[in-house]
Length: 574
Ligand code: ATP
Ligand code: MG
Image 1 (cartoon, rainbow, N blue to C red):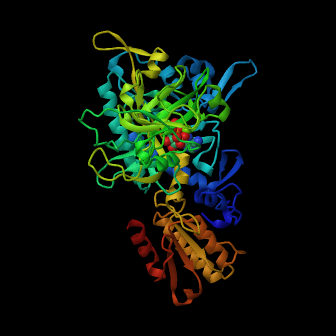
Image 2 (cartoon, rainbow, N blue to C red):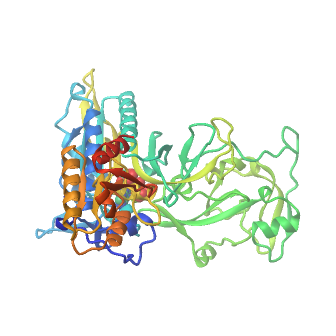
Image 3 (cartoon, helix red, strand yellow):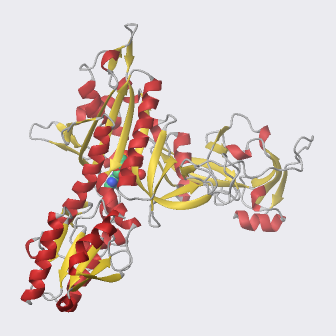
């Protein structure tokens, strides 16, 4: 391909809302352009990258034995009503009516479609298992589409769905998918980590995310430097943080005193005043839980030096989401902000307590009265309390697998695999006959990869202050032959010769033969576009020399014309 013939509208202009390098460079490099909130066009270079990633995903999915299909992008809302998700998906599900007033949705994912397809077509255990996948457009009306391709509204996903006659077989396929995903991300040249994930409202035990490690990642992941443990913070666990030795195994009796703490509301103020540590107190976090039909202010109690993990809290109360409760809403149900504690709360108030302070003695908490706290409380005296894991694991907390000190790192969720079980087969009445002729709902798994998000993730992990640094398996071209001054016939001809030879040797090459652009401009385009290598055909051509540039290091090496191809092959295969 020649630069003079390919549409690569590079620009120095940074899109206004672009904070991430991948967003800036992919737009500036003319890989993609935005036409609406979270909606992108792929220009020639972007399309090549997208197709390369897609091809690797397809190859490995096919190798795993999955079958490629393609579902309609538009699906009837009636299917979503059968599964119950028409109401639970919220505003991410974009609905519309056709001219006959029939309602449809733009597929944000395709469990309903695939269950409808398999139902009544597979009736016997003899035809199981099966794994069907597609690589196709999705639409989610995200509340905050941002970061370019990272969180679009229209995006490309690989989504796979497997059907099994038993849980054991589902678990087998889940492992096959995990291995397949590892091969995919390895082939893409990415540094990644497989982590335990939140299973959300769907429940179940098996859910893993594939995180591309990058500082800008939206997800915080908790990892152990000593062992393999890794989990999204939404699902991370730790060894219980505090033990309170002064009363353990003794007949300690808490005195529960009410003390005046005038104007002191925060954990810090109260602990300082009472000369206790923050871990010896109970923090109240008030949130409004939003359900399908109603809303409710709920109080979550955690230890004073812990933070509420909102996803855990949301799952614990089975809400669609948690939002901040306003001062008015808090007051309306009789909660005393700054002085709220689990003792003596009005009966109508729903509250949950973190597992780690179950039955704890000696803690300070609000007395549900302005300017008063209780000291030396005993949580075991509370009746009918719901305990749950509610806290965010912190750096330095102890790993439950090996005792190591946990650390945080940032990741981009590039894939998610899930043991669904019978959630959809039951709600949509999709059954098969087992060995004994008994009718059973299918066991299902689902497996997603953010194909277009990966285009951005590659750059998020591989860039510098000049531009993109593509990995070898994702780059649109391996080599850019830059003719320093294309007006000089000799230089242009030498460039064309190198370009033709490289192409003949099977190397994906682009020739920067632009007549009107200066060398500096071509070079900065090269740095922005980020192909792994460049060959500069310039002044030293008279001596039979050209330069090879390594995009990662920007190091330049002089080589003779005869050796260019050999040297490049060495680098490419290294
Ligand atoms: P997130 O938590 O980032 O919103 P999700 O849990 O909603 O992701 P899934 O429903 O598991 O995502 O979708 C499978 C994959 O599709 C994700 O792992 C991610 O890589 C990709 N993906 C999800 N939402 C988007 C989006 N808005 N834009 C681009 N890719 C996305
Ligand atoms: Mg999402």
